[in-house]
Amino acid sequence: MTSSNFRDYLYSPDDARVASLRGLDARAYAEQAKTDSFAGPMIEGWAKLYPEPYVGLTTDGEVQPGLFDLREESAPVREMTAAASSLLAALPAEQTARLRYPLDAHEWRTWANPEFMQHDTGLRLDELADETVDAILAIVEATLSPEGYRLVRDLMYINGYLGAAVELPALMNERSYNFALYGEPSRTEPWGWQLFGHHVALNAVVIGGQLVLSPVFLGAEPSVVDDGPRAGLRVFDDRIHTARELMRTLEPSVRQRVISYAQLVDPAMPPGRIHAGDERHLGGCFRDNAVVPYEGVRVTEFGERGKQLVLELARQFFAFLPAGPAAAKLAHIEAHFDETRFSWIGGHEGAEPFYFRIQSPVTMLELDHHTGVFLSNDEPGDFHIHTVIRTPNANDYGRVLVERATGRKLVA
Image 1 (tube, one colour):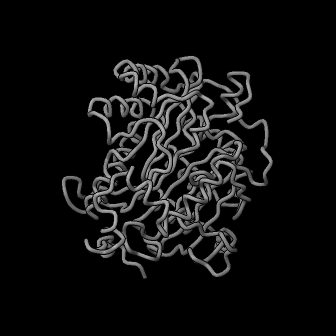
Image 2 (tube, rainbow, N blue to C red):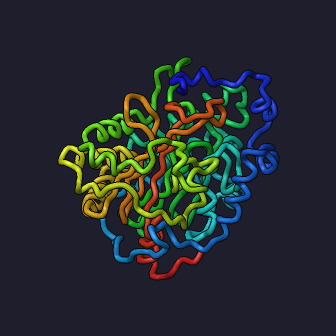
Image 3 (spheres, rainbow, N blue to C red):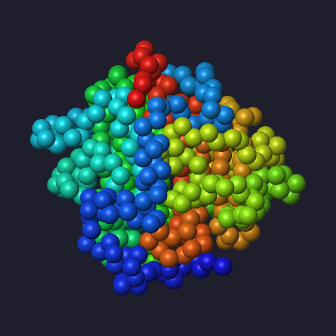
């Protein structure tokens, strides 16, 4: 049984896992990672996926049309545009050129969540002046709800906390992230921004009064801070508690069908079901065209309390959205409730680690407990958590809505 205390899995300072990386920054490690026994094969596999023409995540390879419409959702476009304009006004020409991409640029798909930098898209925060970083984060803050911005900053803090704990601060710190702008900031025309790095990846597109934040990856290793000025910080407890309550609420016969595999690493799994980096989640970086068949049980088979808890999980995932877009997203999910499935992998008693997925034609939400990367646990623990949000059927990066707003097909 894996201990619930992450400190039981801190590498000793002279262990090769961390000692071999000491002193490397993101750029230096980007080259070394290509030959690393763990990172190298992942990089090679993702490099093959990146050039693929965009299709979108589907259940069978075919995009289901007619799911997404342009509408007013009271997105904070005024505040977002003002923050982006302030950043652009302050940047020198060389940084502006590196920051900006066309709205339909293929570089949208360079985002990734590992600590190694596979694509150097936009500007790197840990190479920028404080005032530039503040201006970039002002765009993020203007886009998200206060709760969402706080979570993103907490995860960035935890990344620095991990870097200090394993003595790799140049590689993992609060600024280990890339930021890029796509299109021309405008209150009426589509544009967006991207922030990505270790355990944080956000892709935001605003189309007039409508906001799409997808794909999103938010994670933490560890998920708790136990010393220093922010001792007591914990992340993702709400989703974990709600998911466990949902499993307790289900009738035993329904719960049995919800569980796809009884163990997180299960002999019954087909080859390839567990990815070296993504482990069980299926919507990670470079999986824009993933085919993910439905599993589990339609949530309409759950009792009323079970249905409420599924909606509560969705609310917790989308709490980073401002009030208007969050309400619109939840209403859209509820409108497709009869097509929504819930599936589970792993145990559901006590503090057992697990994976779950909520999947419908308009959203895919995943939470997974992972083994260690910079901690040594070789079994999934409750202190290394990944969460993923995808918008299936071609509306990641808001592509369906951007095409409707601009009247042209995006090809990148």
